Length: 308
Image 1 (cartoon, rainbow, N blue to C red):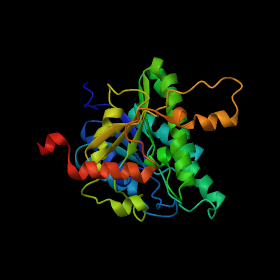
Image 2: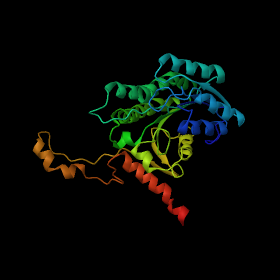
Image 3: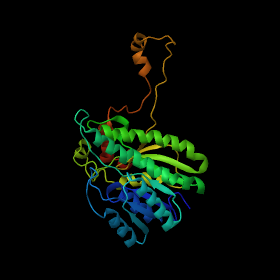
Image 4: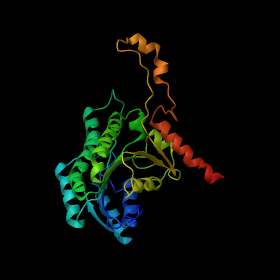
């Protein structure tokens, strides 16, 4: 099996009823994977939405000759998540790939936000991803193979106004990914993170969504990066940014540092601040929208090779 061939691989994709998740599920099935399309049919804020988004995607896959089943559990429901994994094993015998893509938005500035809304967002993006991964982890370790993918955001890396809950969750999954990449390596389980840069239902009505157009940043332009990260020769512990035909890796750089002595005082730190923070950064971005604008510009301009 080549890295681009998913024949007989079994993949669970959460939040796969629309947008990015739908694109991932369709592409995996097209390349031979048997896919569990998970989506409870919620609206963007987690409320009532499309009743059978998962079933619609399954119908598309089957119409194209692929294999798929629908699962409508919420990633916030422990029993539902375990049932999803059990149904996957019953139907296909194993779980090779988990793509944690489910998400909601409840944006509001921090001084106005209801803490319950923040906790609900955390429950979907962070705890939901943790819950799903914990359910498949023993299976992947036992079979000696697994690919887990988390979804982060430029707003988790760089911040964005009004997204305290969302950004907290998206930053937290990076720490979880790094731990699991270390723990799973010896058992053939690779864990990575995708940072999608795309116009989707989740970005509509946001600053990012207002800047972007579907032609420049379609969900499908992220999918090739996702399939690479869950393929047979996938790297491990990587944060891949993908959008509009452009790709980059976030390395979370740190400056070299300055030794001021064990008795250093706050005044010493202040006096040496420019030296402490100096470093050979490439693209120091002040917030999530700045990274989004970078990818949007690259997508619209095209690469040097394409324009040559």
